[in-house]
Image (cartoon, rainbow, N blue to C red; front, side):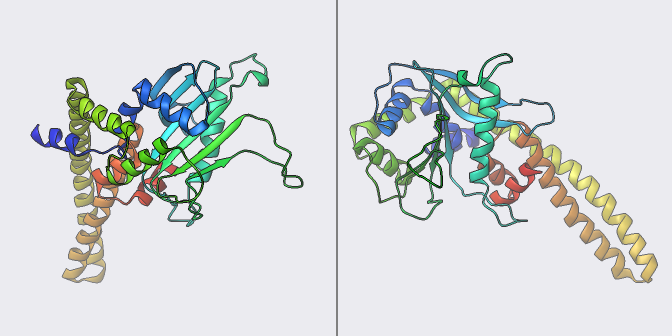
Length: 307
């Protein structure tokens, strides 16, 4: 048990698990939104943290980190993004179309049967990124739909996508937002606000319910890894033996059997990792945690998720 506890103690704000729990502190989350959007928010309501949306049984579900609505019924989805995922098969980055799908699923989930389109709430999808996706050094990249022929014409669909680049150097942000970026990047406290965030993290890590939840999460991951390992090893051995025998008999060489076994075991291990990743994805674990648990790359996990 001690291993799981020490792992929790090492988590920083860039970790999905900890980020969600910090954003569940209303004062902190509300202040971040107010500072980002330069507006006063009367109150916020948590619709559901780590919510899974499956609009159709055969559609690709999404798991949201934190989903919030304010008193004016504007909806916010906050996400922590540590890595810049890419589809290894195509070489294309996944984040832009991921935001497109998130927006579509949020709108579909929000609008009930019989409601008019104008009843869709304004939405903000906000990604905290530990990398500069657009390579322009902006601290914040804000996207709304505009007419290409006349950029002064905006399509007023009230849907906004924001990428927060914690490494950015261009564009104005409030001192508290900059201090938050610094804290995410280096765990350095440079303001009263980040002192509050840091104190909150200590409080969260000392919360028995949180520690129990994290330990359960870690043990569940281990059980799934062990189960997948046993299944993959058995499958790999059987396949390796069969392929080795067939190749050895066909070629009449002893090395055919050895090579077949080796290839089968290697393939079995690969299938084992893939099976583990699929199980963890179905549980809603983050791509980064799954990559760490399975020794797969983030890109490989993203490719499995996209299948």
